[in-house]
Length: 86
Image (cartoon, rainbow, N blue to C red; front, top):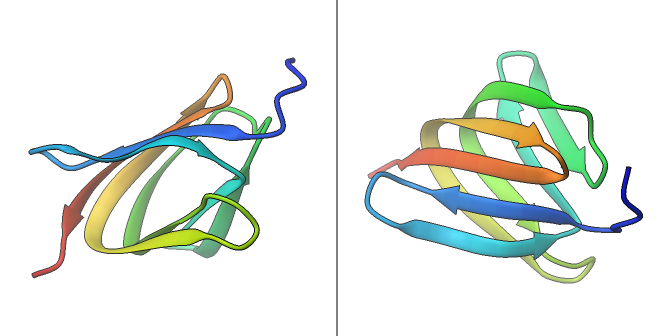
C-alpha cells in the first residue's frame, strides 16, 4: 500500500471528462443507501444513483446530480461513469 493521503478521481459521461484530479473522498448513493470512498479503499464497484459528491478538500466539494452511474475503485483510483438528469 502507498502512503498517499488522497484518492485519484476521474468522473466522466459518454461525451467528456467532468473531473480529473485528486480528492479526499467521493460520496454517492446506491440501493443500500449513502456511502463514501476514501483513500486506500478496498477494491470496490457499485451502481450509483441520485448524485456524486467529490470532496476535493475539506472545504471544497463538487456535487453532480445524476440519474445513474457506476463507480469502480482500484489501486487508490476511483473511476466514475455517469448520466446526467435533465
